[in-house]
Amino acid sequence: MDLRIYRNFLSMVALQSVNYIAPLATLPYLTKTLGQDNFGALSYCIALIALLTVITDWGFNLSATRKISLHKDDEYKTAQVFWGTLGAKISIAVTTLFFLIIATASIDTVRGLSHILFITWLMVLGNVITVNWYLQGVEKFGLVATAGIIAKLLTIPAIFIFVSTPEDTWIAALINSSSTLLVGFISIFAVFKLEKIKWWRPTIKNMIEQTKDGWDIFISALSVSLFTNINTIILGSISGMGQVAIYNAADKIKTALNMPSSQLTNVIYPRVSASFNDSTETSKKLIKKTLAFNITITTITLIFLLFFSDNIVSLIFPKDFSESGKILIVLFSAYLFGNIAYPIGLLVMLNIGITRARRNIMLTAGLLSIPVSYVLSLNYGAMGAAYSILISESLILLGFLVVLYFKTRTH
Image (cartoon, rainbow, N blue to C red; front, side, top):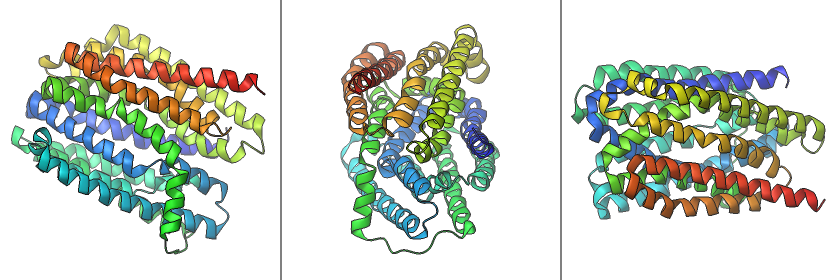
């Protein structure tokens, strides 16, 4: 890997580290100040809005990134992709807001959290104007990463200053949303500072084209959301916000610990896509290094958690979150499968043209996770939701390996 890849990797890792470390820094305070139910309600709203964010993103973070990386020297083509993608995201975001309004008017659980939900929906707007997919495509991520780090770090003192009672849950939601919006504005500024994007009026035809190109990736991302975000929504609807709080506490730590592995794959993706046809051996080496890194880091971290997860939880959360330690082990165990499946699906299957199989496997696993999550959450609460994630990740990896096995046998 050359110096540019390392720089982009470090920039993205730094930004994502702060994205997860900042919430972790305030978690002990929020869980104590808001209490289980209100912290669970905030987590429930974030999970629901995260689902809408996946819909708004529509896979553009990969499909548009790939297009930009392939045509970054063609101003006309990059302008088409940039403005067409942005127009499509805005259209989808408006649609999600419309459905959120309907949901708050017709579903009791959602109606009771409407004030927090609409504040949290601002995160969808932040996602729309965040154009990191373009910056990744041209491998210019440093400026927005630095600014994003500052924006996220500002949430830490803001939480301590403005959130002081359980009734301040909506303020915590507003602080998170405002940070996302700020990162979005900064990314837009960074793009135009590069002075490479020319104005091109997006047409309906072009927006549809960008949407079609992101379809398979969107279905895959939505499938993941089915056994992550919907998993949380199902848990809250069945077992209550207290169980959501316990589950989410473990999930926050799990996600932060896995950040280096997940971000390396995202950083490598544009380079692998750009060189796959011209330099297959280079791409193969990058993929092998990514898999080796993921497997090594995941195994070491899981062994550490087997001994110290309870200690970590007891240091961060109040006593009524003690169950989160065991849930953390189960959730991170899922990464033994996920951190192999993700780069295989993204770096290999997309680039050799078996996107439909990737999509179908992930969609099947996502759909199966809904009844599995329901049954396990009903019987085992937060621990059942964690086991649902483990089952889904293992099924996806198994499906990917089977497809690749038959693909290589036929060639």
